[in-house]
Length: 491
Image (cartoon, rainbow, N blue to C red; front, side, top):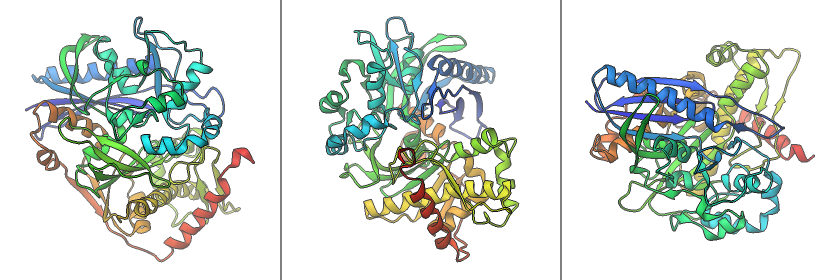
């Protein structure tokens, strides 16, 4: 029996989880961390609090593994992407808070660079949007008080974690994370001098890019974390989920219903040309042969809308209550919720869109609003899947799903009805963590090949379409709501 630990550093918390290569049940530890909203549209995290959550959860998992008499073969890391940390490599102290992927403070700056869009699209595969890291780094140096020095480091959360786990000896990232910075040439697989110049980012402040699967450092041993454990897998959360869903063949597609939702389609080893409304990203690099690319549709708010129901409107006490509440009514009563709280991502890419609720009457209840929030997840996914099919010329034949909201049968049946394809829910819903474990274990010989990884994927339930005839009309209402929410903050 071999144990592989995955550190899943998400947007709202850190989960460390051990996976075994046999049927031994896994074990996990979780810690939330604080969300900071200092101004409208600004979202920040404390890098030290994230690191403390990594230490606490990893130490607890390692203690469990030792207690059952096992050793750890490898650590894999997966992380919220685009969130950027600045720190001093000499002292190890971060320069203030991390700027989170949801943050909109650089929207106007991105708009001012519209003439550079062809360059950005061609080299990075992305669009000019504050979602990505490049404009965040520029803001940190221009407005955030970060000064240039030989010891200045900019990194996504994976870089920050690896740097700390290795005592500052490994300053690295992988191509799946690098390709989300708007500074990486995804065809040449290196940092782009052109894009670094566009955002005035010193190339020497960026991490060394290593394969997604391959040893990139070892732990030094600290605060309950054993020394000499290989760190052998690194991937951004959505690419890790694609890997964890065993989507290894071109055309295979998954959707993760997390804080946001992210639809990724494996498009093989040839980097496609930029497509309207879609992102082109590096899926993974296994260290031998060409990288694998993916088309991606990024939806900013899905599970976060459930948090809004809980914390903002306080119509549910806990996230798990949204499913039963939504199922207590047969439909949304004509209510449409467009959760554009931080703008809209694919295929709209409008940072100035804002959330809206339409169709409220005197008969509207909290159950109707809850159901409309659940339906908004499925509507946004249809937006992306239709745009992806148009961009790629490939219609999906099934959709593999994961993430916290995928436990809701209502959501997945609604999704199957709207897409008119089967939706497959695996037994292991934490595909993000599983993908990180697979990448690390593959590098260290725990799994011998992609075939052995694929054989580990198990179906829990298949949702086949059961249309009621109203799907297209309801979806048309949704699109009207989206149109009315566009460019709201500039009206």
